Structure formats: structure tokens, C-alpha cells
Length: 359
Image (cartoon, rainbow, N blue to C red):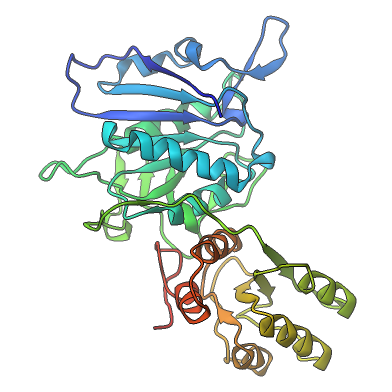
């Protein structure tokens, strides 16, 4: 992908103490009105005209813009790999990164990058908007300006990054990226994280929840770019047919399945259903049990209707979101480890995506 890169003229001194790279991928946040009054993708070399407040930042601020804006519905693992490449190439030159992204698949992208960017020491913050930057009541300005503030935040004593994680900032809260879900399409509070508290609340002051933030790693950084896309989601519902289940699990070369179950991880005990799962597992398909509930967690074996999943070898996903489960499966399967190692990695907490895990 070709990209365009330029610096923004801010109030930074000649040698600014902090630098942030703003990466624009597309989405509502980057829309503005043209001369005819139509919404079109904004040219980011004219961003200052739309957000003059950027001049007040005392940081080095650069923009890396993909030449063709991508609607988030068209985001693919190839785009995630490109974002990882951009961050890897610029990691030493900047103190933080902000990614402007469409809201519809932002939780998937943030989850994917949380796994692909291993041993982070700097913030990578996704943000976007429900209304275009050209609208009077837009949330784009506030979301972007606060995300930039958060990406530049450092501890006063150590000068280390305050939030060395992949996150989503939206409507006054900063959420761990692999814990967030889009829950609203018609209101500004579009994202929630039911099983993990916000990392920051933005009111008059920025209120950091340091106890909830993962510390920066002391291990060598790894920038992963390979994901295995051969995964599916099988969402259960009362009356799901045998042909539907078998049709999904019989997909050629399938390697992973997110099994969306009821309640605390429950599923039908009909013999045909159990047999269909067993056949897929015997073919080497790894299954991750994820609850359809937004809150709570999977506890395989709590009821009879989940004990059979545990006994078959389905991996309990604890309180992972579906978005994070999809990304985790792609990432772990992409490591091409043996079956026991793959199972162990899928069950473990890798990037703060689950609260509890099997040893």
C-alpha cells in the first residue's frame, strides 16, 4: 500500500519532548463536506482547517494516511498486517500511536493488534466517530484530541508511557482494545467493556485507573504479521439444525471455530450435535467456547449442558469477547505450533483479554 506522510505544525518547541504518529485508515471520523455540501473523505493534509485545536499541542505530531480510505466493513487481516508494519517501522521514532478507524469493526482491529504487537511499551490507541468531522455536533474532534493526549501521556517520575497497551478511546472512556465491543449505532457512547473497567475516564481531568492498565513489557518486542484466517463463528440458537452445524464445521481446511454458546457456556446435548463437534475436533479444528452474554464468563462443567463440551476438548474462553476470540484464534493458529501448545495458548491470558485462565 502506498501512503502519504506529513508533519502537522503544532506549538511544539524545536525539540519536543513527546511525539505521536496519527495513522488514518478511513471511517466516519475522516469525512468532511466538500463545496457541494456532500460528505467525502477528508484530505488529511488539510486537517488543521477542521481541527485548529491541534495547533495547541506541544508535541511533534505526524500523520500517516493510507491513500485510499477503507470503510471498516472492508477491513481484513491484510490491513491489520499493514498497520503492524507501519507501527514497527516507526516504533523508535514516536512515543505513541493513534489510529483513526471506522467504528463498525474497530473492536476486531484493536483485538487483532493487541495480539500482533507483542511486548508493547508504548500506547496504540484506536479512535473514530459516530458523526463526520464536518458536522456541527460531531464527536470526532473530542475523540481525536483526547486520544492524542492519552497517546502522549507519560509517568512523571520514570517518563515511561502511561498506557502501554492497544486501546480504544471513545466518548470519555479509554478501554482495553481486546475487551471492547461496539454496542451502539445511534448514540455517542458506542463502545463498552463489561468485563473489564475503563483504563481512563475523561472528565474535567483525565482519571487514570493505573491498577487496570497493563505495565510495559521488559521483553523484546515482536511485530507479528501472519494470521491464519481459516476460522469461523458458530452462533448457537434454539432450533439450530444439524445441517447448519455440519455445514459450517465441514468447511474445507477449517482450523478454528468460535463457538458462541448460551449463558455460562452451555450448548445442546443432542447426540448429533455432540457427534458433529467430535468429528471437527478429531480433524484438528480448535474450538473456543464464548458466551453470547455481554457480562459474566464461560464455566464449562458448571451445568451438564457444558460438561460435555469440556469432555470433548472444547476450550473454555472464560470472559473473552467474540471479537477478541476471533483475533486470538487467527493469531495463535498463525504461530503454527503443535496442537498441545496451541491449546495452551488459546486457554491462557496473552494480552489481558481474559480475567481467568487455565494453567
